[in-house]
Length: 377
Image (cartoon, rainbow, N blue to C red):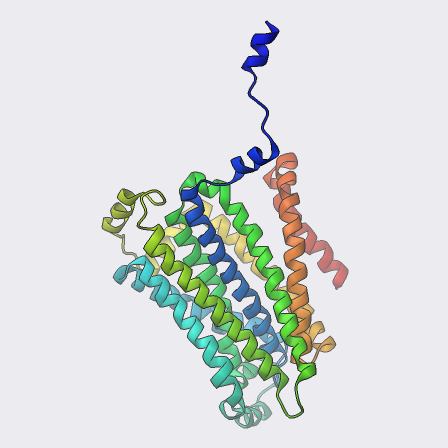
């Protein structure tokens, strides 16, 4: 009857009831909010470091955008290989939480030392006269490698900033996130981390712009870029301190809570024997996997496209903004714009995935870079 059918229908929920049903339960909130905060602080730092490393290296004496491929090939790549070997040793000898501290804290110490000790003394530390003598005896094509030697502390900063993204954001955070969350939780909440990451880009970009604009109020005789650098690295260290504090809180309050993390699985993971593989064996294992090979091809192709585009683009930026603070202000606004557009595209991307599938969505980025690249050149 109509009465029975009406009784069988579930009661309509009010707006507040629907909202409450979307809120994660207490045990999930206890770990997801700190995890999201960690990711925010990591990406906040990475945006500042990414913008600052370009300003330092591209606007330095005798340097320019043409130096970037040389740094990435001859400095960054060996450093990444060396860190991989070091990380493997650390994982064999230390617990995962101690590996996090051992990898993160040295970055923060270096960035603080760079702003307050190294940069104020670059006039003494950088061998400009020595490089000028060598440059006179070498062909002009050696200009980019010599610029790296000339501005060696900037090159080290560049590598450390790149490594922050690879080590702390890509490796340490996601390793820890996978350890804390279940597969079902990851499916639900990892996309939200991506949204939070782009919010971090917007905030950090505006902070970079704000700091770069402070030069207008500085008295004569004060190095405006030196002052800006101290504020930028001060924010990086403060944000990094928040990151380490949240991680420590999670180790004490979340990892020991049975409602948040399965303690039996935790113990089993600790007791499980690690398969020790050298770099050579690891490389053989990766090459033998078609899935990994295809992913590597994607990453290498992406890197090649980015390098081809960014060298020309950043060379034009240097011509437009030769002053470090002006260049930094532009990069701050650019990062905020990137975060805003990416945020919108992530929301739109869900619709593209649903309507056209993964293949079509994956082709959007290379198509865009091809079309805009041809238009630019």
